[in-house]
Image (cartoon, rainbow, N blue to C red):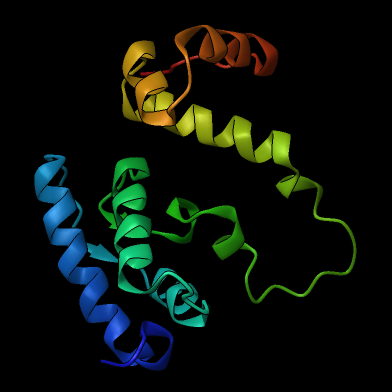
Length: 140
């Protein structure tokens, strides 16, 4: 069977398939995937094949808080793909990406720090330190 990078036309079907699975598991009402989201998936070189795509969709579903998966739900390397850089992208420095990701996970868990730490795969003490460092809060 050819690798995913050689079957880019299959990506939308696979993404929709995994969206249905993970939105059902997570009890989320996500009705579709934006065109930009699919475009970024199809631009990627897919070294990890279908398993990598599956993980990307699962992560996007967890982070999504809308009716549709958007580019904002993708990892930062997908968000910057295809963008022409005219200088450093300060909005994508590691601290900014980490802060945004932690905030999204806190929003997803509705402020449950224990669950957020589990999803982030970090200790609860580390999460509290990051919340303090970035001055984060959960807003309902």
